[in-house]
Image 1: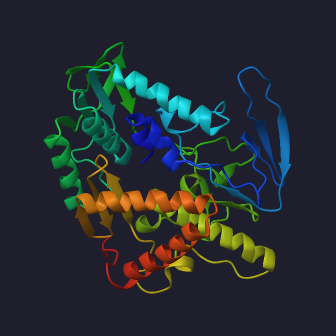
Image 2: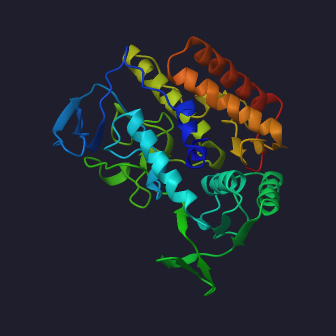
Image 3: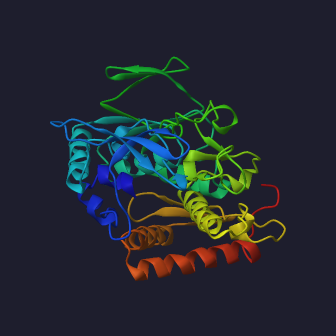
Length: 361
């Protein structure tokens, strides 16, 4: 859980690793434009050096730029060129939090809930207020999971202000839409964002102007661009089907997996796969499983797998296992890759035949 770094800065090194460089050429840069055969980039630079602009040619392109966050600490900044720079950012954010007596968190989705739980568990002296515009937290989760989370937060002295919007916050006060005022020492905005990045070069039907998502066909090709694919928070299926386009870490990985498979198939002259059937199979009701694992501090949490909900320490153990094996996989360790090959296949089988996606979703 990356948000744990805010209360335990040393946790950063348990969930971070260098990008593999043996089979890839890693460039730390900001994409400023995408053309038909190249990407325009601005190379990252340290504060005391000058950035340079370059063009990176491609035969195939996969856009997987993720999402924006209003809280900058959650995603690396362009000047954070090393793991040491990133760790220093978390330490600084931790020191700021330690000085606070009252904290307001705006947004009761997965990020806001996990942040509130981490602070409530690790720093119980801090008074935490969570403001959410809807009447229930984490609306994408099953009702049982939402109740478990709300009960845990209230038990741990987190004040919930549900059905309320923040009209303004300035200085040390936060004004809600019912004219009530909250005092705070630190405010965290966890209300989500848009697709992260600039897509100059895309026009017309390829770009959703309201969300900044790239529209794709069910082969995950960007509309009008045969050799450009998109995945995760960067993409939006042209023909939307609710359970097929959930925005979370698991589905982001699955779309990236299928986009990569389709690039290989296109290069080999094979027919492209269609999402989600290319991964989930063609059975009636098959789809990418809805998997969420929400941390509530280091020793509690809630796991949701389609309609099944499991709360308590077992969810926390599973979250730890996910993080540990993901780091192994990303760093190129065979045991991590093997684990996730088996886990992905097993979770898809269970979703298709045992714990099925509810028909009405």
